[in-house]
Length: 157
Image (cartoon, rainbow, N blue to C red; front, side, top):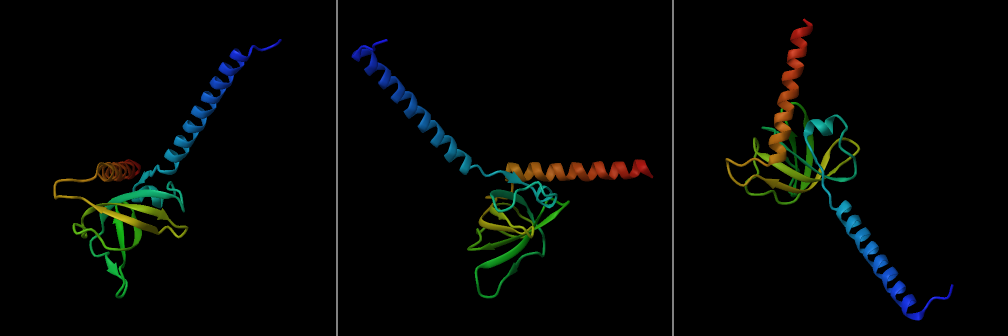
């Protein structure tokens, strides 16, 4: 079958447009998959549900008395908790002004193979009445798990 030049040009244009759209969509999806930061609570991280060496967000309350500074550097270590599990966090940089022990935070970084969360960004809540939704949900889930464990223990006795 012989193709008319006009028809061939239309076909080439359509194939080119479809190919271009497919390339653009695949690049957008790839970029979005690289920028997704999943949230994990201290319980999730302690139970091994969080991936290691992949950028994630972690949140919880800063455990009272856990903040330690390393010498004269900007490096700090502290624990975040959901009142069921604690996870050690290390961060090098200037902490937000609102950061303090007993405060809800969300940190972004990577969980290393030793179970220490290496943060590259720490976000503190901006006023006394606000709690990041992820942290609130994680704390509520942890309290629910604790209550269920207590009820199961009482039933087994």
